[in-house]
Image 1 (tube, helix red, strand yellow):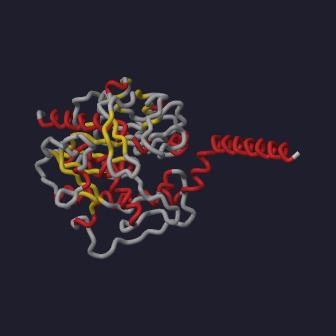
Image 2: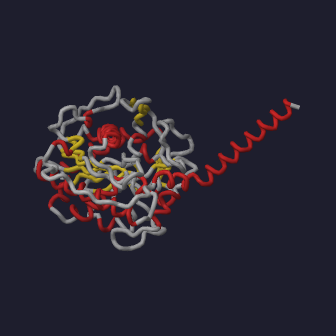
Image 3: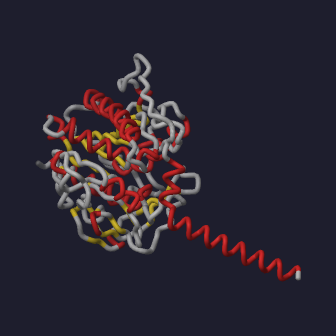
Length: 370
């Protein structure tokens, strides 16, 4: 009798686990939103008096900072190259709290994560230029999971810091050098606004080698016409924009498309149903597909994220439906940060690190020959 009851208990636990797994699969996105979206009201705070982006303390990286994290390279990879460009890099979201809508730049956890992102991502450009990466009062991760008005206020607030940092970059960096613009996720969102509102039509636009707007959707019809630069259609083109968002298959990009389709583009037109720009990092051009053999190397981080190795071949890539970059069904083991829907957003740079490095060098050489 006791054995039978035990078997019934085990069976019941198995059923509960299966039901729990099913509920998670069905409602993972909604549960994720509830866990991450701030519930407090947005509150704007002033920058302390006298603090500006002329100060080294307002930057994660710039050429005069000792222990510059952007000089890192994966094991067995030489930095090499000659710094012929200035790189302005905007880091992705590293503030994961829901206690407020914007991070303080003195918040230790988010700043430590930001340094890790700047090192692992912007280092792809350290063979072609000196990298400038500002600290900024970024919006919380949950701001991207909701259409609340407070979320937009938080993003606008963060963008003002980024724009101030870019103006300081233009003032302080060598004025005779080409410029490479790059960002990821929230950093790329701010980069699109920077392109549309500050750079398009300005003297600085003529200095842009390429803009790597990675991990953020750009509507081909509702955004791109306002950015002042064309998409990169060929691997040796300069003065153009690259963008991609990585998903393994089967992909469920609903967490992206739900917010994207409900939004208005930079032209004022709706983004609903519009295609997103996809420049394949393996081919250097819009659309198309490339096999794993075209991938020059993926960075695989260690358990503590303090180092990484470059492995080849990496994943294949093809621009799929609506412009998402699909990397196939053989999911690479890069760590525990894959998002719901087989979204490899966190690894948009890592998946193609060596190709991005070669791409920037190639486009810079083309730019210098103009």
